[in-house]
Length: 128
Image 1 (cartoon, rainbow, N blue to C red):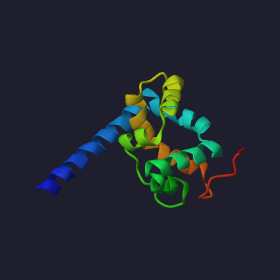
Image 2: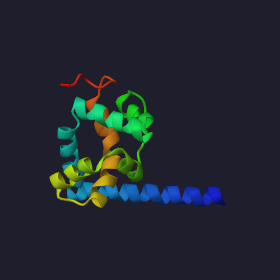
Image 3: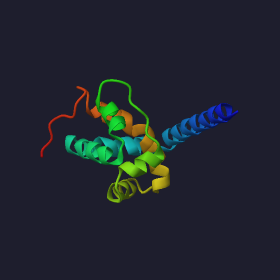
Image 4: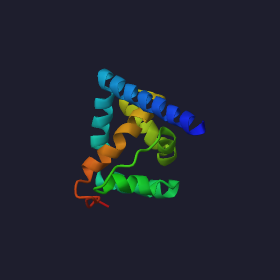
């Protein structure tokens, strides 16, 4: 019974994430977040993100986005653990949207965005 309930919850979560993705696309939120990520994800910020991920116990997930294999998903709660308050506030300031709106979309888009910025399967040299 627990497996069935867990499967149902997983299906509901997938449906909600799908609807959120559709809504984000329809409202332009996805485009706003993509534009922000394109500016935000420099080699230096990817290295910072990786360091923060290691500290948060999420290094395997972020490394999967950099590598050339499958991108592991990240939840909104994990993203909250990964990002510091200043990073979240910067996204709020750039988009004008609340964290509760941005973070689920970011959780959906961030793995692919990091992957796109690391096409060789590693972080390009930074300026540091």
